[in-house]
Image 1: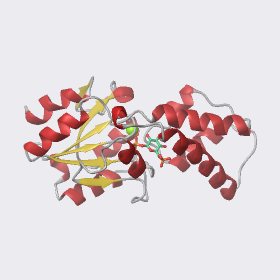
Image 2: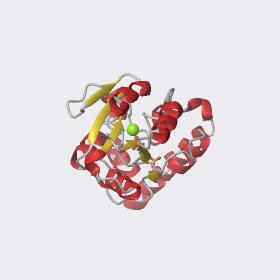
Image 3: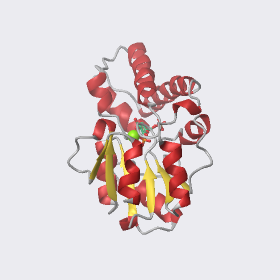
Length: 212
Ligand code: B16
Ligand code: MG
């Protein structure tokens, strides 16, 4: 039986993907680098610095490490400005009800996110205090598709990875969960992924998988 559910954050519990896009777009425009939706899709679940490297593939010149850090910081400022628009109404539909049911049935819940802005986002959408564990980009060295963040979440929960179910919207995240030896449910952008064990149209469909 499934003993724990580990949620990805961006694209699963809240749709910050549009803010990431807007913030990268603004930075790229200022730098004269071309950027569009097809590039944006490759950034899902990937860390901030790795995202920047993908965007800079289109750049005419090369950047030093310190210039790259400045660009990433600038994007993050724009992004955090946009995050101020989030309210509890932006938590994905059905999330809170499903988490409450997990609590009732003794199924543990955790966050497994690449984002270093996880604490701020959870605070804004009113989910800062509902999870049994939070593993995020501030605590890891290797980002998805490396399994580190999910293994850390399982370790914090004290649950064997084989009994954890990960919910992801990114291919990189599904691969990370696979490498962690966990079950995987795909939602949103990752819906058609062949790596997934389950496909969800919405979070309410989690109940059937977890509680049978
Ligand atoms: P930050 P997730 C990921 O979050 C996003 O999908 C990805 O687009 C972003 O680059 C990454 O977080 C890092 O975010 O700049 O806030 O540290 O999907 O793993 O919850
Ligand atoms: Mg995601």
